[in-house]
Each structure stands twice: as structure tokens, then as C-alpha cells.
Image 1: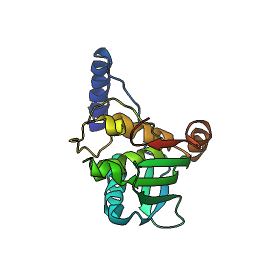
Image 2: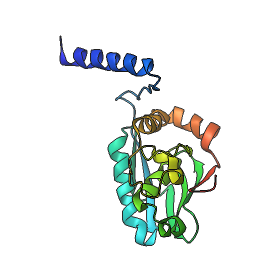
Image 3: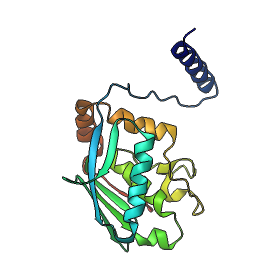
Length: 186
């Protein structure tokens, strides 16, 4: 049996086991999908610019259909202010992120916040599960949570959204356009 067949058999077995215990199985996009590069400008992010660069690297290591890269023309601009962290999504892969110092002052992890806000730009909504393992649980997870990595389901959803330019355009028009996401209070 070839290595590829063995891997498929193992994946099929794991999928069956997960479905039997009630876990959600999410298919990832095929490896042949085009990679979308999203350029961002963190020059207005002040002391948090490094956290957003780390968050971009985390997403780049977690997904295969999209790349976050500092540069221009920037479709995402990152700012810092004294409020709560939030993202204003203008379309899938574009918008403004505000790193609000209020959450940082309360002890929330800077890189987790940055990675979470990137998640909104990449099409993910808040999911107030309270679980540290869910990046998009945001401030519903304990202040002690330091996990800055998306779950497998979150990464798979981003890959699905960016599987092709046509799909990305449809999703942007249908589900993320014009939404804003705030770290706490929603």
C-alpha cells in the first residue's frame, strides 16, 4: 500500500471516529488552490507592530490559501488606540484593525488579540465559547489564556473562504462585508 493510500485510510478512519463522538469534521481546500496575498500596514500600530507581525506569521503557518505580508498596496491598516481591540471588515481580506490598549491593560495577551483580530479580516466571526483553544472565543476565554493559534476548524474555514478568487468574492459580498468586530461586549 502506498504512503498516500495509507494516509487516506488513516484520515478516513479518524473522520469516522470523530463523527461517532460528535466532533465536527471540516474539509480543507485542495492544495492546488491559488494563494491570496493580503498586504498590511502596521506602521500605525505603535508598540504592537511586532505582535501583528507575529500574528501574521501564525496565520501563515496555519493556512495554505492566504498569506499575510507587510507591504503595499495595503488592504489592511492596523492602528492603536485606548479602546477595545476591534476589526472593521470592508470585504474579505480588507479593513482596519484597532489594537485597543484597554484589553492589554486588563492582562489579555497581545499576540492572541492580534491573531484574533486578523481572524475577523480573514472572515471568521466571534465565537464566545470561553475555550482558550478557540482563537475566536476572544475575551470569553480567561485572561490567563495565551493561545495565539487558530484551531484546526478555524484554519480550515479560512482556507475554505480563500480557496479561490471567485469563492472569496462571493463570501465577501454575502457574509463579511461591512461588519465590525469588537474584542469584548458583543
